[in-house]
Length: 93
Image 1 (cartoon, rainbow, N blue to C red):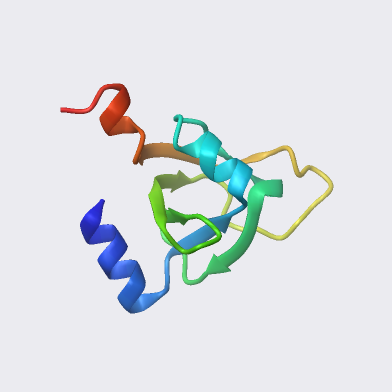
Image 2: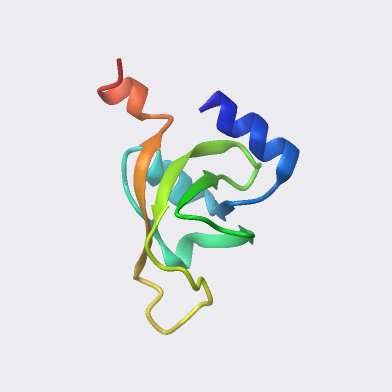
């Protein structure tokens, strides 16, 4: 996770910013919904860095939906949680 944070700070790409409430839920293992995405740092690849509004890395997720344009279905999951900072406290080794 530390490497992801350093790389994001240097490059500012391949990341999505989510709102504060979604960042809390993500740190408990939840997936990211479209309505939670506030900013996209393109280009995006299959594995994406998830950051909170203060640009702190919260974790990594697998991108499901490539086009993140807001649609009528904002309840749709756009990426699945792979690992988050809370993982270490829940079950990490």
